[in-house]
Length: 137
Image (cartoon, rainbow, N blue to C red):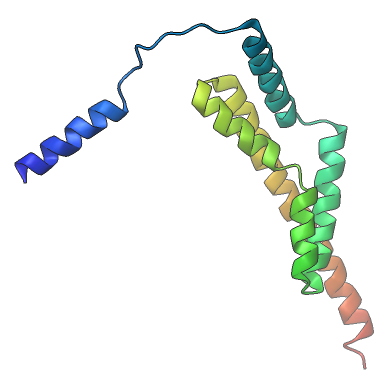
């Protein structure tokens, strides 16, 4: 048991040790990294396009759930911009960029709340329509 815990401890030290390997970085690599950083950082931001895509995806998901259409629900996932903040949080954790992590988490939570609100509105509307047309018969 003691040798087993020592083996696990040695393994974890090797996995989590800092790297001493240094190398050269070309100007092209720096430009690519900056471009990737800007693309991920911009994908986290809340703007007009993000809002519109979020609302459209929420409506499509609500309609898909109401009609029991898995294809429509999956298509709403393809429309949804919510993956941007998830990638931003992951990337922020890797490079330990706390402002990016906080911004991503805030936008992710806000997006989920808005999706839930839209779902409730769509559900209430469809329930009222069902009650008006189907229950009196």
